[in-house]
Length: 409
Ligand SMILES: [Zn+2]
Image 1 (cartoon, rainbow, N blue to C red):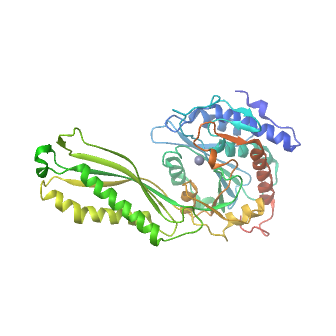
Image 2 (cartoon, rainbow, N blue to C red):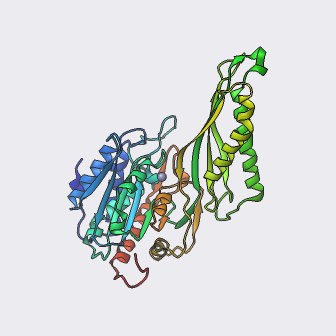
Image 3 (cartoon, protein in one colour):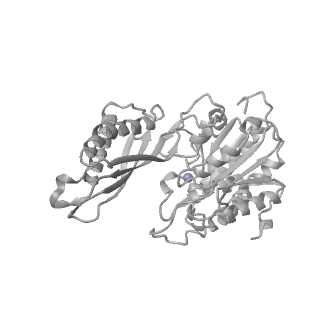
C-alpha cells in the first residue's frame, strides 16, 4: 500500500482535506477487521501511516497477541490535552444483502458505502487525515489517539488500554469518542450489563415429571421475574427523560435447553441484558434476581434433588455516561461545534470507560448510528467534511494558551 500518496500539500483546502480523508477511509474499510478476526494488519497500517508523519505510536496487544490497541501522542508532552477515541473493529456482514463489496469503499449519490464507514472508521479516517495539520499547529496541549479492538464484542480492548496507561502522568483533560452522532454532542449514555443464567435441574422420564426438576420451567420463572421487574421500571421508573425509552430496560435475548419432549430437562440457560439509566446500578437488579433464585427457587429444587442449582454470571459491562455539562469535554466540544444541546443515547460506547477512569468524556463523530450494523452501511460525504472541519477547530482550541475558554483543556 502506498502511503506516500496520502501526503498533503502545505495548504489544505476543504476539498483537499476531504480527498485525503476519503482516501484514508478507503484503506481502513479495505481491512476486514470484523471483531472475530485479527485487527493487526489495520493497526500496523495506521502505525506506519503515523510513523511517516513523524508520530510514534505504541501498540497494546491482547493476551494472545492477535489484536492490538494503538496509542499515539501529537504535540507537546504536557499534561492536559485531549484523547480522540475510536474502535477499529466492525460487526460481521454475514447473512446481510450488500449491493457492493462491504470491504471496498464505494461511492453512490453522495454517500460512501462500506462496513464501518459510519461505525466508526469514518471518525478514525478524519482523525488520521488531520495528523499533518495537528503536527503543523503550535499546539499548547497534546492530542492523543486511542484506537481500540473488540469494542463491538464487549469493549475488551479499551479496558486493556486504560489499564496500561499511566493516566496520572499526563492527566488528559477530555476525551471525545467518535461514535456516529452526525457530529452532534452526546453527553450521556445508558449503562449496559450482559449476563448469563444457567439452571441445573434433575432429569427423569417425563411420565414421572413430579420426580424431576424441570430446568426449562425454572428458567421460565426467572425470565418471568425479569419481565415483571421490567414492568415495574416501566410503571415507576426511575425515569430519565433524556433517553428513549426513558427508563431501564431488561431483555432476554437467547435461550437453550432440553433434549427431548419425553425427558424432564436437566439443563437450561439464557442470556439477558440490562440497559440502565445512569442513576441506576444494573448490578443491583442482578443481585435481586440472584436473591429470588437463592431464597425462593433453589430451596424448591433442592427439596427434590440436592444437586440442583442456578448460576448467574456477568458477561459484559459498559458503564453509563452521566453528562456533566460543566465538564471540560462538554465545554470544548460546544466551543468547537457550536452545539449547545446535550443529547443522550441508549446504546453503549467506550465513553463509559474513559469517564469511569476520571476523564471528562463526550461522544461526537461523523455519520449516523442509523446506518450502523446494517447492510449497505454508508456515511454521507458531507459528514466526513464536517468531521474534517471539526478537527481543524479542535486543533485551534488546543493552540490557545491555558487561560481562556475552555479552560484547563
Ligand atoms: Zn461503534
